[in-house]
Image 1 (cartoon, rainbow, N blue to C red):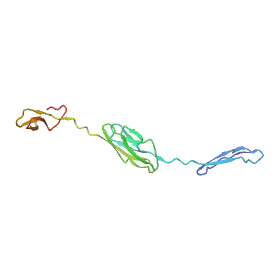
Image 2: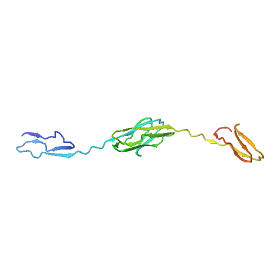
Image 3: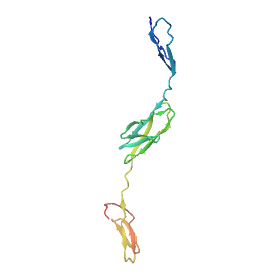
Image 4: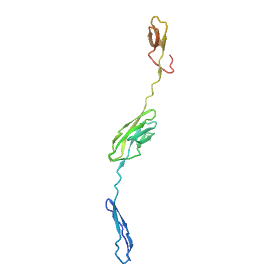
Length: 180
């Protein structure tokens, strides 16, 4: 008539055990149907680590890639971390997928192998692109009926000597809107 309850006090290392038919009341006979089943625990997931760093000098939006596929859009200076963690021992390669308008971004310390810790030292430095050179135009024309040499000046200083009839062009190009 006594009650019994068989439980697991301590699981063995690397296994999980469960009790079946472990509770009941003694009813005039030995209890022989208690069953303990142990199974191996699944292996732990591999350790994973993130890849990130800092962006500086950014005035627009830069698209960064890790290993050519894990994309990340960054719109301000500061820290960044790619969303997909990598297993210990995996390689990483951070590159610029799309440059921000008017800037060029370069990556330093962007390649390596995960070595048991998050990567936090990738440096993305953005600098403004130089403005395009101004559009310039040549000044010239043609000389007709010339029988000697004529010296021509543009704006009082850019000189050209012409000694035969035909076309001539001043050496100095002028920006759009400049007088000649």
